Image 1 (cartoon, rainbow, N blue to C red):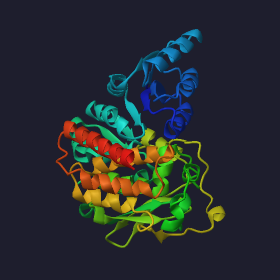
Image 2: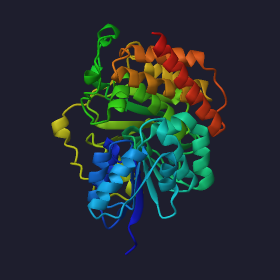
Image 3: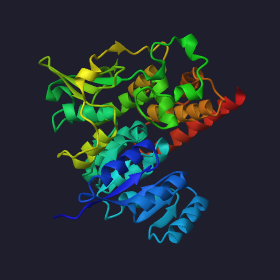
Length: 394
């Protein structure tokens, strides 16, 4: 029997990381945990180290790393603890690692994810911002270094399952006419722009179907998450924005679809549980148990579909426009949104003002080529400064 594959989980304490560890624990004969990383959730990371005994653990700050190091030593565990961005890159490109789950939220995930790609790993991409910020550069690196890239977002994973194994080179080349990206509509589906003005962070984080972190929950509520997914889909599947239609599907049972030239529409269905796409990414091209119950169509009973309301939720339109503009525009969009969402969660910005701030920052930051990592990171930094400055002037 072959040795278990070594897996690094970037963002282990978030919802995707927790689900990944659940799937890994179901198949100890196939996988072993090499490294776990977290931003500042040291207590959760401690419990994960006790449960999974990784060789390495990484935290953002040295103070947290020292705290974890002391407790692991007291527990008699041999896990080595490191800290900082360099350590994230190291555990992503380590020679013994075969699979990297890229689940760090936001722009912070770009460098370690790109490092895993350049090291030729199987990369399970749950960090959409890496592609949003550096799509062309990122996909070129996948091809150049022979990495295997498997999308983990439920929508992109569904599309991946509905497309031919070889789907690069343009959709029409493979008889695909359109990608149908489904959206739950979030907690405010059907709300007017006026009603959205008074939304609180607690309301925005109460997603009706999915269990997610606070930042991505807000993105889902504004439909920015769907906009970022549209950009990600363009890069993953070599598609134009005009070839992707967002379809609001409140049951979250159909995770996305691919339409073909002969009139066929292929869909991937399943219960809304991220362990399904995670298990698919880990085991592809095989299938393994994910711990997810089979879909009961009689219990679901009906499937509804409606168009997205871009008047009430302008972030979707802003994302599409950024992809059409190209270059550093998506990186600017993402950076401005991260600042805006943080301000909203801190009570410094209204829900409806998130899109307004993103639009103003986009207008203030000229589009530049996105061919070098340094230029992309510079555009990201400039957009953050512009967003913070506008917040301070309010």
